[in-house]
Length: 327
Image (cartoon, rainbow, N blue to C red; front, side, top):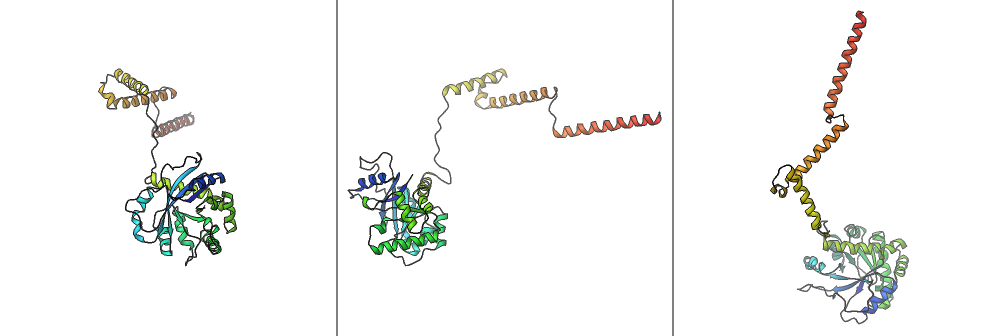
């Protein structure tokens, strides 16, 4: 399955349905609609992407996810990240400077770290900083449409930034997305892989960027929102049929009646103890039959018996030796 986790969403975009249909024709199976928030968070946080979408001609086998990208400019936004993440399938952060990037890689809880690669950043991407985010399960996003639809300067900045990110991450934990504002900026999955190979990312890593790594980001985000400390949703397995329950109770009641127990003991669980005792006695009787009608001996008893037999054999042999000597 091929993933494109960044298709910008706008309520006034009339060509969004065409963009989704074209992405499906290119071979993408999962597409994430991205809603960007710049500045302060609103007082009442809610998902800005309607569900279901008001489009009737979307492919039935195209899975559409919701994503929110928050532009990090001030640290006071951090306290409401959990509330924001609960309304979307994927939460991404877009740092604007080195301090916010360090904060996003270390302490902030998010799924994807998305950088604007069409501009020249006044800092270098450090290996230790980015690998800290990747080890925590966060993904670094590369958006190819930022440079392709821009001018020559944006294209140069994109190539240089991608080369630095590939060098700093050793090609690990990278997700390739489009961030195309229209169908013109979309490219097929294999075209994106070839573009990444030209920019310095190996073809295998590029293929993982649109398949394995993107799927890992979606699954981990889903587990964060539907689980708690490693416990995920409990699957309801159904109940036992009523007839089976009655049969079990009747069997227990018959066993209790044979031993003269009152009916109330069945509800208190005493029948299970009787059944267990009965099975234990049956097992001991069966073992005794195999052992010549005797009960099974413990290891200590067997050692004592072997020692007594050895002593008796030595005494008998001593008596025979004395008899031969006397005669």
